[in-house]
Length: 190
Image 1: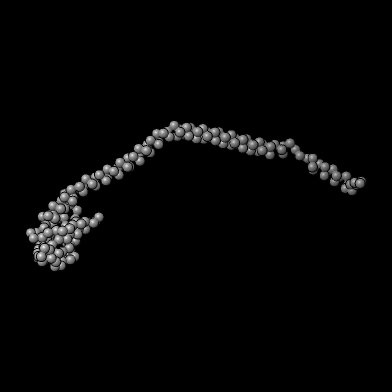
Image 2 (image 1 turned 90 degrees about the vertical axis):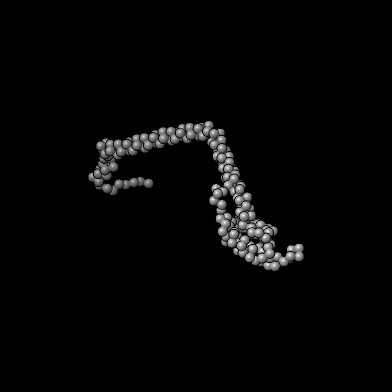
């Protein structure tokens, strides 16, 4: 195939000079910018590598210290657990010590409140502070006197009669009763 250029010669010359007419001054500024960008990137990479190396050394040092302190940390944790168990036991002992004489004082005060001709046949205290008393006597007036004495006591309160009925004990007519009361905390036990 043959190529024929139909352009006049002047246009051919202009076309060639346009594509070849690049000057050295025009290349300096882009080259300087490209070189400067390359230096900035290289500097950033180097500083990042240095920082990474420093952090890796720091992590390795902390890991070594952690491994060296692991037995001591385990001992401290074990001692903390033993102390918590000891504190729990001491708390239980303290509560037992504080309530050690409460039952004795309760029975002593109850004995002081029992009038003549009244006999208690049962006394039970629930886990809280409710005391149930059962007994026999010859008269309802003695039951009333017993309830009044309990109310006057510092250890008992809210005395309520549940049951008072006639019954027989060895051919004698008696009044069988059941009452409940609240045991108030003993200030002298603390």
